[in-house]
Length: 115
Length: 116
Image (cartoon, rainbow over all chains, first blue to last red; front, side, top):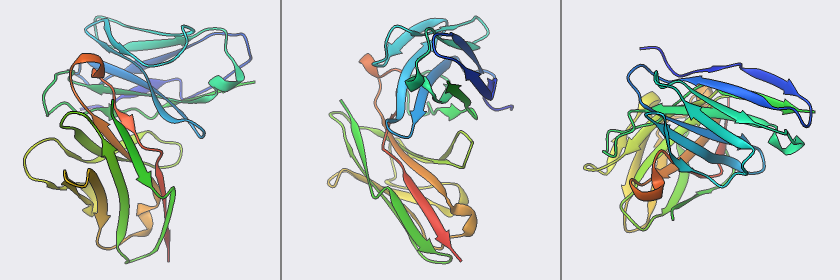
């Protein structure tokens, strides 16, 4: 099976712009979670989508949003970019069940730099 | 709410020496515990996980971890370090249901350096 793919791998934007990142999960996985990784704050949970519905959300401002399509692919959007949004954005896919077999598998990440 | 503490942001060992990376968790319900590894400019790779059953779990690349409920610990070990083990390691905890859907809570990470 192909792994989790994220596009683009690298992005450079300027303050005030908006950006959209894409994540394609492992085939058959219905859950996609997004994380932000920074040197100062570490890995922080943004949100999770399952069957096109957001089931959980972390403590991030409303500038961070996401969606999921019927084929389970997910996008996250950050509007009005700030310098502090520079980070590695990781998505993870899983089956989305509540059982012990549910494990998250991560993509390579998108490195966003805000100038 | 759950939390994870990794003791030691940097660990340095010699090639062939024992690797021990410490992880303590806090959770109000039985947790599922994970170790992930991250190589530079890459995503996270699952090393091993504990869900239920046997408390000593074996993972990839010779790593293993033991779940100790009484100590709320899930330390990662490898008997003999290899140069290729140099990376950053993350311990994570997950519970299910309620507001925990799809959410892993990570420790701050431990950078492992392996000296020849």
